[in-house]
Length: 363
Image (tube, rainbow, N blue to C red; front, side):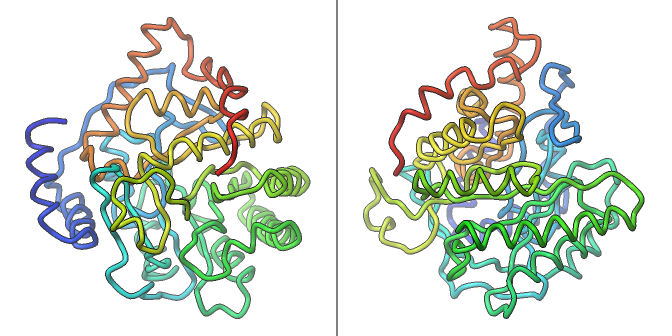
């Protein structure tokens, strides 16, 4: 981390985490954070679900909840940015405080509760972006929704003309009952409705189908992973993101903050999310797209996700500690890894440690 980044982090850490997050968004919007130039490297290009990504590193949903800075994130070095989670109607989310730093653990706990300005506000921003910008839209349900599946369908219809891909977020622990949508019958009904809406919108637009991914939790049983894999394959889902935050608290140093309710992310999430990723790769086969998220903080942790079965990787929480230069450092580090290991493509790493990670116990 550069001196300026360390100085900036120290300044942001004088504010509470949610205020600091807002200031970082403002800094991107106003250009106070300069672009981090990353030289194009054909070895890092990846094509999955019919989409070509300049590099395999993405910003996960949760940072840019209201689609305010996706272009600025890509200029930091990310190969793609995912905005949201967006719900049909605006909602304030859970009461504050709801975001906590666990500095000793390089971790974050959040119980934000899908706070966002709703579909209409985000669409107005997204429609002004270049069509070539690789922006995914993460969709969810309002907390008080009477029909959660209908909320996901509304997300597909609202953003079909501006999303390069969709992610259905059924795995946040901060909306009561949301994770029940991962149960076999509920998931089947959700995917059937969402993919039918996608197909209808594609037919109207007369173009290729926009891919739909599903973001799952790391707090799963072996049987739960079986169900998700089987339903995803049966319904023709385009891919999975593994994983969201965890409700687990194993091995944390900061026991005071560990007692806060919400989802844990950052460094402690790496092992459990990578284990679930590898187990899912074994279940879905070699051709099904998987995106690995959770604890990515360096080129090596990004590469390990790929070794464990990921086609692409995402980060968010670790940038709190590593600063805005993290994306460009990781991308440059992956190019350096290709040099050292004489790889024709970063994809050559994929699945080389699936067996190792899949042998680890869940939880």
